[in-house]
Image (cartoon, rainbow, N blue to C red; front, side, top):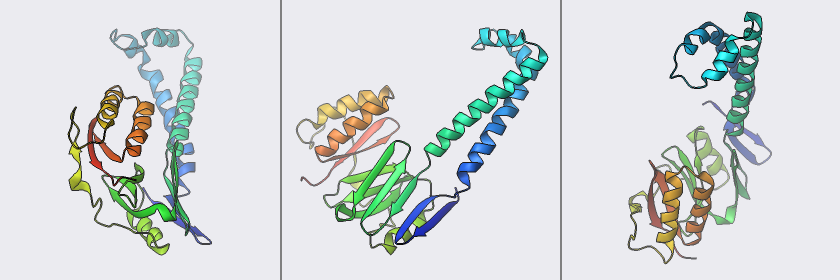
Length: 234
């Protein structure tokens, strides 16, 4: 994605280009409307496919007049495109950097970290991570912006930038039940979190991740598998 690095006073903001939001709100509803219009040409064929889901809805659709079919299909396509646009804009990442703090916001994820707590920042595996002085992760969120502009914003304000990625990557081990070396109680939390990952329960997964952070355990996920390392104790 193209990005914009705008400074207001002594603040640097790394985010998607300002035109990205309006482009989503114009483009996605138009695409949805076009798909809805196209649906009117193939709905009879869909009704003939008895294995196709929502057959009842499609059969009701075919009972409408041709004009009403067109109006309904385009309206539904516009609405779905608009909903998708709201979701896309909501999920756009914005990172604000100034002399006192770093803020990362993406969807419901919102982290504001005081400068004194930040040891360094890096990008690896399409995620941006803020490390604390105990080697713990203070923030970890999907990253799809301009890496060089983020590095420039951080360096301008005196934050540590790690161009080579995670300095502790080699310490991560795949979690297995009863793994040695974990603090007391961590295995039970990791077991519960594994169950949440397999059930795609994001709320439980994030809540349990916070519990592991309190135990000085850093966890990364890959293909619904957990990989862990230890941070320094408080």
